[in-house]
Amino acid sequence: MKVSQIYVNLPVKDVQKTREFWTKIGFTINEKFSDDRAVCVVLNDTIYIMFLQEDYFMTFTSKPIAKENTSQVIVAVGLNSREEVDKVVNTAVENGAWQHEEPEDYGWMYQNSFWDPDGHGWNITFADMSQMQAE
Image 1 (cartoon, rainbow, N blue to C red):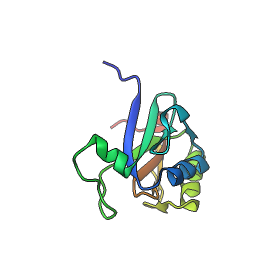
Image 2 (image 1 turned 90 degrees about the vertical axis):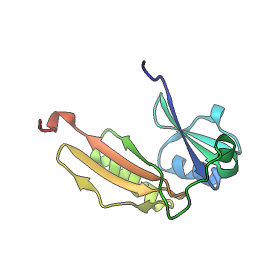
Image 3 (image 1 turned 30 degrees about the vertical axis):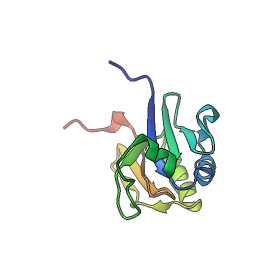
Image 4 (image 1 turned 180 degrees about the vertical axis):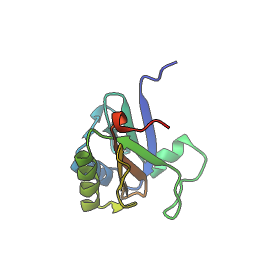
């Protein structure tokens, strides 16, 4: 079996602010899957993040939404260079996110991270697999 698409669904307090945030850091919106209750952020041709207004999100589950001082998921996203990683994280922080951890450089992999305005964790990485040492 092979998955053809991935849609990650995350609750947000304000869909319009979420749309503005992700657009400012360089991502596009799939308008076909967006409205006043949801915004679909395109990561690539097969991976999408569906940010759903909290009350709309709750129509899909009976479990409570994780609150501000909790975490439920940290999404890791791979980009094409260290420069892209820092650009996304720095732009996110400039637009309402906050730094999660200091950047980490493993030689073959570089990672930087942030919490978005709704408290969702994002690890932004670049990996050069040709530089990874065999164990």
